[in-house]
Image (cartoon, rainbow, N blue to C red; front, side):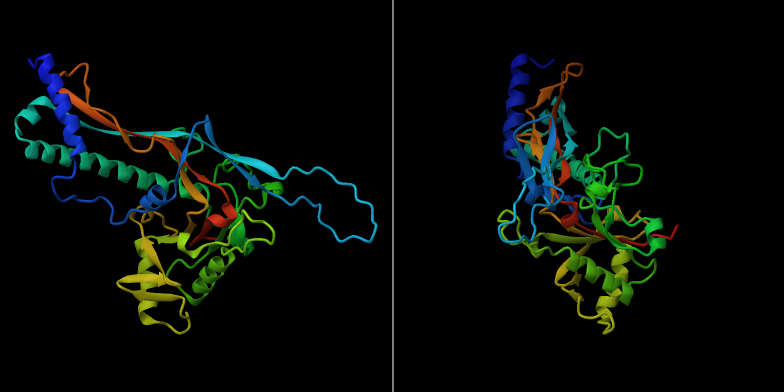
Length: 356
């Protein structure tokens, strides 16, 4: 049996080896070809100091105070509250890796131990990356109290009824089955500005009409800041990303390679990638199961992953298992969630949905 001193030494060695992680090089057989969650996790994540939930204030309507007036006209000012809060609950994720004391003894020498730890840690992180990628593009069930809010929670596709009505634009209301989005009922005319842009595109091929719809969606999402509102900025192209599945990408690439004059110059092909107005269209494995073959335009200036300060992919010290004294576990935990601060600016979704 390992002595207390030996176990303590092992724990110190394990902690030291974790700090030296990166020594070994090995191949990972990836689950997915592309990963999109890194864009929001690495570039647009926000640390929150505390609170029981994630809260953001949004201005959802005009004050109605502006008017053209006559000279010397009397004014009776009214107090109008235009602010409302959008809220998202905290969600918790964990992953872990185990080491057994005999494993370490059988791999004596610092290099061998670091190599062993390296493979286990990378497998742990790859498993977490797969979970986050799936979570990002999954709409949780209404009663789901565990999952992150995925992008489909905020960028809602066109409905069959809307296809029948022949409408498009900022009409993405609440997700199917939901009565609200981040605490606001987007189906209510009160919150009609809390809706995302959507439209329908063809089920097979990428047509001239589809290109026009994508162009319109793109143009509609480039907002110009109102005069005299310093905290509002023009939409920045650099913060946009385009995503689709491999089926739709193949259709777009066919058009891009043909350089079809009827489509125009918006779609191109360079360095092995299909481009829309110079921006790569990234295919995602997790969208391959979506039979509507959607195209998402996402503005990560308005979609953020918010996490508790100090609770983003934080790794614990090695912990001895109380029932298996030779086994040590390292946990990696995250407390956070995805939140949208402006659904109108957050992006668009174009998809093949049948009329209903």
